[in-house]
Image (cartoon, rainbow, N blue to C red; front, side, top):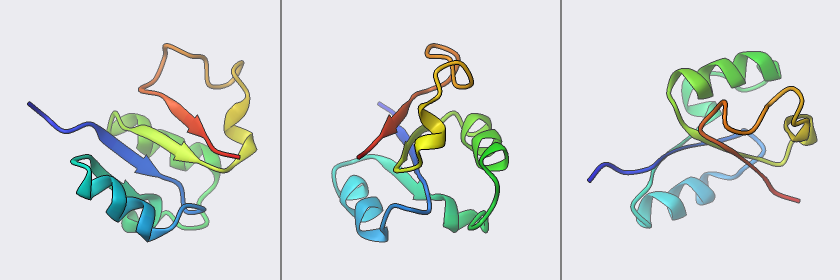
Length: 79
């Protein structure tokens, strides 16, 4: 059984990644790939290329017209 792949935005802490990894997820942060400070489009392209579920605090990712449900692995927007 493969682990669920998760990418955390740079606004999430390394401790969040470690928590998910300890829970059995294949988790990493945007900053792990040198994408710190990258624009949303660049981050999103990488998330989709890796087929990862995305966790962020960035409200820009809440636009369902731009990020249509069912067209990507998923977004969790935390507030």
